[in-house]
Image (cartoon, rainbow, N blue to C red; front, side, top):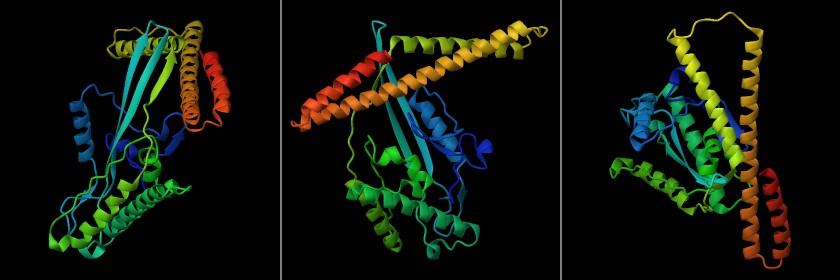
Length: 306
């Protein structure tokens, strides 16, 4: 009952976008629009642009009722370089979620398509509430897969994060039941217990060199496309040697890019293992020797990656 659409490019996502799980980035929406913003004002401008594309329909309870949930994710990365030998990357992600309000058919007086939309909204809110309850109670199974929204927000609920829920309520006596239910729903988020740690990854110098090579090749391709579009590059007769050289360059760039992604993913996993071993050594005195030996193995693998 849920369809993921790109609010920054609604025409190309009318049929819905697939949701995939990436080992390094977590849950990722395939084909979603991503922008590189350099200031907070640019982020706000994109937010306003996306809000204009949201589905809204009037109901008896709200003239501008949202018929969908909206998610804005902002990823921030900070890179440092130390004597051109080793680089440290700090990264974080801010997820802003605007949930459509739960609806009572008796209040909204919806019929037909609007009534079906309201039922789907309530169903996704129920799935989110079930996940929050499971996390708050410390259950081993959390039903993230009951909804695409909860799958996308998995790392924002029970991962390395801080979770805050803001409730929009009304003091009107006629909205007493909605206000009470909303406060009960939001109160569940207070019981979430998450472990927050710094997201710091280490990238060796040769990986950074690969990235510079890839960026240089991409810039060269972009310049050639721009020049050709302006009519500055004359069309040359086909040449098998030139085509073969271009294909080889493209294959080399792709190989380097895949190597960078794989090495970065492996190093992040190894760093997480080190953090876990440090925690075991600090909290479990009896298993400190085993943890120390495992730490030597992990550090040896890190050295091999370099």
